[in-house]
Image 1 (tube, rainbow, N blue to C red):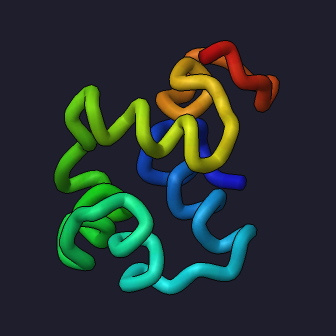
Image 2: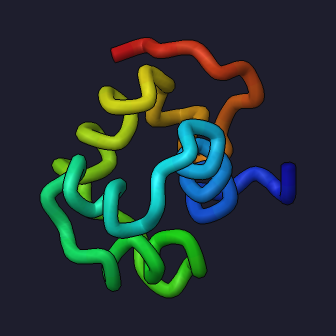
Length: 75
């Protein structure tokens, strides 16, 4: 995996489950363009979306944003 940041970890998780950007957008109730912007690092999710992403993938927010290396959920 690339350097630890939200964009790379989010993209990694989406690809691990085999979802397209469109499928991921549907699950998170955002537009496909937003998924692309998150994955490219052009934008970052707001707190509500960050929580939804962490819950969807069952990972901690700290892991998602690159603050820790182990993938555990602390929600």
